[in-house]
Amino acid sequence: MPFQVHNQSNQIPPILEVQGLKKYFPIKGPLGRFGGVKEQVKAVHNVSFKLYEGETLGLVGESGCGKSTTGRTILRLTEPTEGKAMYNNQDIFQLSEKEFRQMRQEMQMVFQDPYSSLNPRKRIGKTLEEPLVIHSIGNKKERTEKVMEILNQVGLQVDHYYRHPHEFSGGQRQRIGLARALVVNPKIIIADEPVSALDVSIQSQIINLLQKLQEEMKLTYLFIAHDISVVRHICDRIGVMYLGRIVEEAPVDSIFASPLHPYTQALLSAAPVPNPKVKRERILLKGELPSPLNPPSGCVFHTRCPYATTRCMKEVPVKKEMSKGHFVACHLHD
Ligand code: SF4
Image 1 (spheres, rainbow, N blue to C red):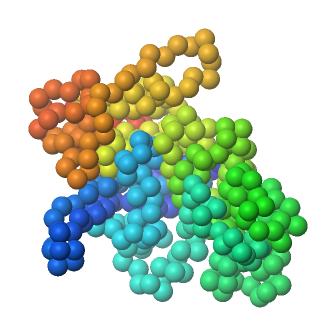
Image 2: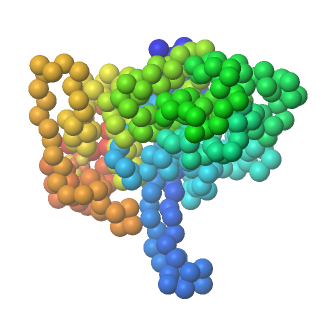
């Protein structure tokens, strides 16, 4: 378990607070940059959440729901359209390039496929030293020592320093991805589907490793995943995303015991049940995820919701707190 967990009922300020985040991708007209913006893909729309020191907040939802874009926008891998991301009383989006580069040491990202970002001709040790060079940390000897230490912490061996990326298995490559993020001693890790490309047995090893590292290095995680059953084992709280919005947010036990949003209920109905004697009725959603180019009016889930009414088609539901730390945006709970 994480070394310290705070929830929204605590008065302790969050380590990161995202407020009204929007990320729209413009679609240019037929004349490219001379054709003006034709339409916008609304990948992230008004997303707000707080991340408390030492906790793991999961962002879950189907592919294309905006969870990865949210993570990438916080780290300015793509520029936001609107909103704030407050870290240490500073809005990340307002920092100069120089200020942001300094802050970036404290906030790192782990990707689904670390292999694609590893230079196949470079020894792993050298790749892991790169972030230390970028942030001007230590001299040559200290950097090598730091890399050896981090290899050990992520469960790799010292002689792995001299190997090339193709000599590692999928699970080992993800350990390298973690090592690269951790080598600069960050405070926050944004992990974007870090286990979804791995076999189930390897997934649990990486999840256990993430938990161990969280305790040892006092880390805070934003854990992005499409599989709600994966986040159950690592997260303290979960935010469920649908079409660029967070529709439900709650402590993990609360969301598994009593999901309130019809979309969360459908996601959970498809998740494997640990006890095979417990039968759960599968809720099949009608239709496909609508296009973020032209999201439905009112509640964006109304085109697939089994409980939709005419009100749902017209009125956007407002997020409400139904019990301690359990928020939902749905007219059923007014
Ligand atoms: Fe379904 Fe209406 Fe609730 Fe949206 S607001 S989830 S359409 S019941």
